[in-house]
Amino acid sequence: MTRRFLFVLGSSRAEGNTELLARRAAEQLPADVEQQWISLAEHPLPDFVDLRRDSDHVRPPAGGAVGLLLDATLAATDIVIASPVYWYSVSGLTKRYLDHWSGWLRTDGLDFKAAMAGRTLWGVSALADDEPSVADPLVGTLNNSAAYLKMRFGGVLTGNGSRRGDVLSDAGALARAKTFFAREAPPARFPHERPAAERSA
Ligand SMILES: Cc1cc2nc3c(=O)[nH]c(=O)nc-3n(C[C@H](O)[C@H](O)[C@H](O)COP(=O)(O)O)c2cc1C
Image (cartoon, rainbow, N blue to C red; front, side, top):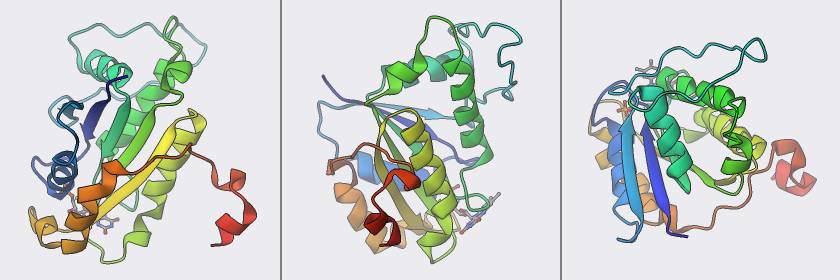
């Protein structure tokens, strides 16, 4: 199956560090891999409303932001969440996109969970802090979301920066970007599903 990467840009500013780093990583993808880039700031999703079983979730109409994101998500073999670190986790725009997954899980005729199983989730993220481990909540959000949907998880490529363009001075991040998408993404596992030795490592 031809791979098709969806890049979901979650920064509230255009051409920020996260997007720059994601574009560096994407440059390394083979030419036959399709790429689609969607900025959540340019296609703002409405606040997610939790209807649960109170009423049927219906497939959103094509043409709107929800329909665009749903169709793009379903068409992708690989979904790249390109979110800056905001308060140690994903940005609000990104979180809202993930919240809509909950609605899609309950939309008749979609079988979103089965559709996502086996696909790959990746993360790219910029943060101001010099210590990437402060972004562990963001990594955990993406890892556990992938595990819940029985997806593969390719990990998160992080880069340092505060002002726009700073990440281009992070030589380590640019080096990691060169091979980031080339690695094999293993099936995602919740932390408690990992072998004890791996958890304490
Ligand atoms: C609302 C907000 C919250 C932020 N929270 C954090 C944080 O928790 N940790 C951190 O290291 N940087 C934080 N930052 C800094 C951004 O991660 C940093 O500026 C990053 O380069 C922004 O990415 P972008 O250029 O792709 O928008 C925050 C920035 C904003 C605007």
